[in-house]
Amino acid sequence: MRVTTSTLSLTVDDVDASLDFFRTHLGYQVAMAADGFASLTRDDAAADVVLLRRGTEVLPPEQRDQRATGLILALTVTGIEAEEQRLRAAGAPITMPLREEPWGERLFQLTDPNGIVVQFVEWAAPEEPARDEEPEQPALRVISPTEDNVTESPNARMTGLAAPSRGGTELSTWTVAMAAGRTGPEHAVSREQVWTVTAGALDVTCAGRTEKVTAGQTFVLPPDVLRQVHAPQAAEAHVAMRADGVASVPGTEGTRALPWAQ
Image (tube, rainbow, N blue to C red; front, side, top):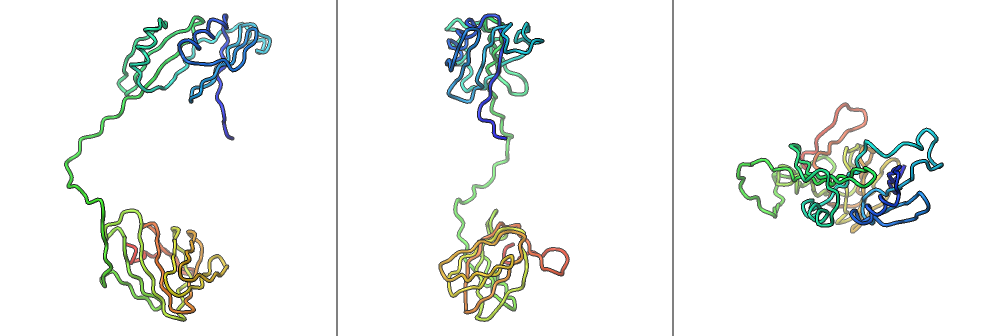
């Protein structure tokens, strides 16, 4: 379901009196009107309002003699002090002056000639808790690859770049170098990976489909899908992933952390 418009229908004795109130004080415009009926709207997020004269046949028989009571039309606004001052100056019937509740709600109310209560609301900004002064962190981190961040496997050489242990917070990046003819194990990773081949070419099998990816091209591996990477020729690639990704291998239990991404 997609809601495109919200409308509040109000049954009143005097449609014209409420119509004048909503136009004069609340900035509503008439979308359409007829005897005993008016449809009002605004250009912002306020709900549309329909005014129906009590006794109108379009209402269910058991509701025709009822009035719109026991409800509040609440409008959340900015600059609530200025709104109250504007309405007071215009002679609007303010029936509850501006007040602030302990939970941070600031509000005032006015009542139209048919007894419809309109409430203006603004929420006070929450106070931020006091924090101990922390040393200013640099806006830029430069990470240089070192031999300490290299992981050798039988099929590839991974050099860790950004990672939580090296100044990153959300992403891990690393480079992969594979000699010609090497094939990585079939596995799945819990997070999406983005690979950019920077030299040579890779044959990438994912969910049973194989694609040849050459230098300058990028491929995306979805999470939790089996994949396997083969180097028909010497190849290098740059990989990016969310830092909390882990790997799983068919036929084995549990998951494995990627050391170069930690």
